Length: 298
Image 1 (cartoon, rainbow, N blue to C red):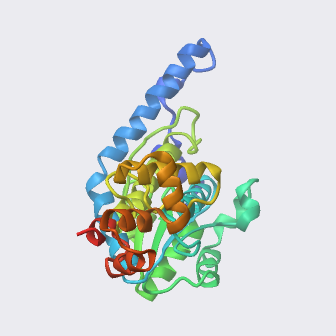
Image 2 (cartoon, rainbow, N blue to C red):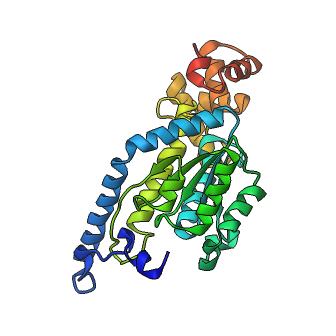
């Protein structure tokens, strides 16, 4: 794509609402930014049917033993890594179940490495090195819809027969066309021209939140709206786990703490108390229910 074609992208256009942003008061400036943020939220709302299709497809693949991979460069890559890194503490998933891969590796999380995104072979290579397979899901993230690194990874995934989801803010873009499920929140021109870490980045973060959270809700990692798969790995999470047990069982907080110490997991503790069974029996019931607490309690 030439520089002129890049300049024609809606994410690269000038935003009339912010053309005098350097002349207005700080409060007015923030009002312009806030109004733009609402546009990002609305753009994501218009994509809910496509996001829902992706959530169901991701959940189905994970239930069959597949994994979820995010692939991106720059801000897009960092957002993928962020979402992936939050899944183990939130849902107690193994680190390899949801993986975020960024062009340039870990160093690119802290400093800009712009050139690495221009090589499509690197995208495929990074997926191969991270054991990406036919049963997995690749979410290619590129707000411009044209990042060669992401397109190379998506082409590799399609060759394997894996499911591909594209997240981009540009309609009819190469990333949208390469994806089996394309999610395209059209956020339009940025407050600071071309700074897609802003509206486009906000929309991307919202979409990734929905993909991972929605998939794990479908898979039974959430009970009501409670984080029952939380890993009590520190004081804060131990407290949250005990409060969740108390909420579901009706136990006093201190009783919930004692039960958690015996069970070492929220769902196990709940089954033990509600069904009056041992830890071994509770764990067996949960295993038969594929970890779904409501099903284990029936």
